[in-house]
Image 1 (cartoon, rainbow, N blue to C red):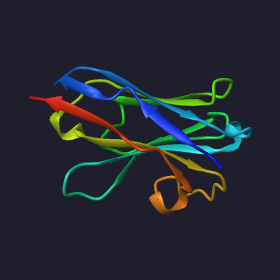
Image 2: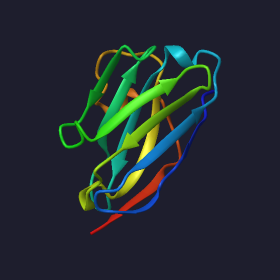
Image 3: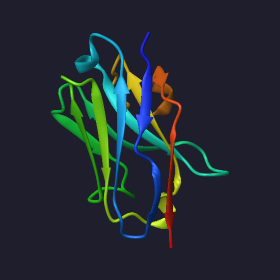
Length: 125
């Protein structure tokens, strides 16, 4: 069983930065594809970023590309999301997710088997 615990959310002003962390259990963490998704009130959960295997490949939603960076430390079983130049439209609950059987559909939330509880990010204008 994989357990994911996010941390690092909070309130920040427009243009500010936050770093989210997601600590994962599991002996084979390095083989998981890890993703970040977010869900704003009244909206569907959407893809933000993903990192495959040992970190050779990363993927981003167009709305965050150039501002957010996903990374992983397999020795610490942790994945990070560095968020810079934050905008009010980035306000959402951010979820970490793990895909144990990567099929290439890194942006499809249905591909991820395990989810964290979420962490709130609020960007004030």
